[in-house]
Length: 165
Image 1 (cartoon, helix red, strand yellow):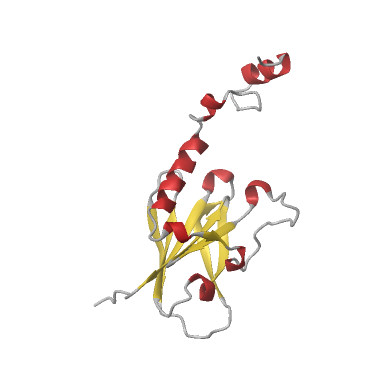
Image 2: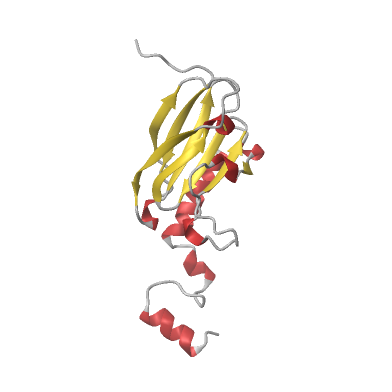
């Protein structure tokens, strides 16, 4: 049973509270976005090889060091042949391409909108020189500035880059 304060908060506000029943939470937009992000990750080759790796990000991740970065934390994970970075407020990120693409192959980057799963090509790059110093590549999300503008950056290694004729 909800305490009186919880009932008033729930009735007077259409925002979820700590007293909202879990089954109402399933219909909130964030629940659908999480499902889309899950399907995107599971569609990647070798998705079971994924692991978190914050060292891929050379720019500020908004990590406070005490585990309280909250919803602004820029996070990264790497798998066999791909790297993914989540930018919760859009904006820009600098990625260590030597770690993101350890093989001497070409690469392609995509922006994925977690609200609907759509992709747009961010850029494609040349083969990375062997044994180069860790240098980053700057990526700028299509939109940013608020938590409604989060984006996933997918950098994938490609065996051959198509050349324009």
